[in-house]
Image (cartoon, one colour):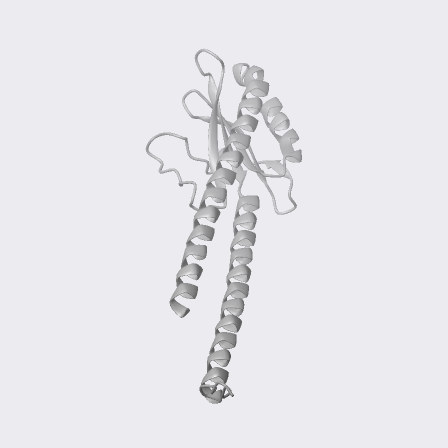
Length: 196
């Protein structure tokens, strides 16, 4: 009975861990697609400022994306990866223009290792081309992953509470079974009534 309870507990735990990892990977993909869509939209909107080398207009336009609360930073570069303008979220939660050397968004090339979907990082970085045929620059976007981290934490708490409840139920069942055995052993074998 105890072996069955332990095996069932281990099987349930493995299913929950697998489920958490799959849900985390799915949520990571969704966040990455959202970040990529935002970066592409920013790229479409800033094309004229990049082509005109209008850094002031570009910085002003980037500040307007402050309503997207999960954007941590945006940097626009020209085709040589020279920063033209950038914004970073400050302590008050607003996107503010910062100098190029204050933004440490790395180019999304093959030399920078990308975190996997099971890695928990505070942000993810995506890049979108500015220009349709030959890129005239790039938008580098750093996107907040705190909703992903919070969801993963909630899932682990739920799993731990379930496993704690399961352990209590199994303990109670084992205690009940052992008491039933003790009661049966203390009574001894019952003699059948003599037949007349």
